[in-house]
Amino acid sequence: MVFGQVVIGPPGSGKTTYCNGMSQFLQLIGRKVAIINLDPANDALPYECAINIEDLIKLSDVMVEHSLGPNGGLVYCMDYLESNIDWLESKLKPLLKDHYLLFDFPGQVELFFLHESAKRVIMKLIKKLNLRLTAVHLVDAHLCSDPGKYVSALLLSLSTMLHLELPHVNVLSKIDLIESYGKLAFNLDFYTDVQDLSYLQHHLDQDPRSAKYRKLTKELCEVIEDYSLINFTTLDIQDKESVGNLVKLIDKSNGYIFAGMDASAIEFSKIAVGPVDWDYYRYPSGCLIWFTVAAVQEKYMKDDEDFDKDASSVDK
Image (cartoon, rainbow, N blue to C red; front, side):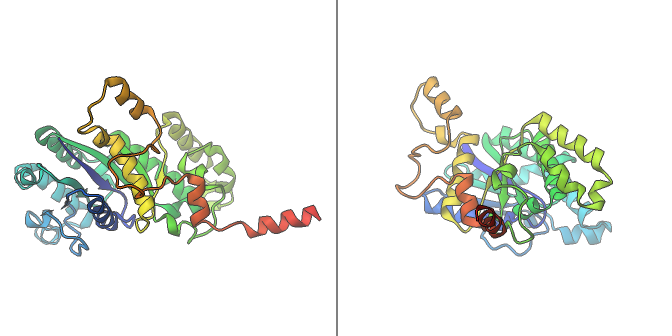
């Protein structure tokens, strides 16, 4: 049984940087890691990959040969990979004995909530090679500063979850830069827990472009809340505690924590439904510290100085 991650997300969300940082962390805690680059447009890799789709097909060649743009070219590449899945399987088999797998996918979001090729590639690998994979969906944390973009990110995350049908972890990446584009309207837990989205309506109405589509936005928010599937964890890829806490969630979702454990079904159930801040025996002592959302907010978000001034003036 082999475990791994399917790393996906929009362009610029930090997938390649994530794969690089995650592989370093996993090696630090004693796992052998193999990165599989399945992005035919990614020709400047910061990591050494065990398998590279460019050995099979290159986006630049497809665009020239078939007169396609980058989006159409990526769809063609995924279709071609599905047709040549035996090539990928043969490359993966030598890694199955003792490696943890990281699949670095393209950033074209249509591949993961609309087209079927990428999903079929993943499902064939799972069935033929007995893989246990978790989809790690990265979303740039700065989108939280714009209510309209945040709702769009929620819709994308929900659509991707429903389409891929994998164990799924949604991640607000680059959390250390969350306020680079403006101060958040609410505390961080509002965005990570996806709380009552009706509170966003007032802020959306302040933007003339969003106000025009108020009824549509309201209905979309109700769809998201009706499914009640979305929440986020946070990530600063340069912070080992942040990466470690994410690894805990992923290991729980794909079953890595149960591998090699000799326990009863009741004990397994307790771990499955319990919190993730257990004393995790798979990590070196002292390697991980559990971060609550409040702790993340305190670390990466500035205090509202204006609020403090107003409060002090009222007290006087």
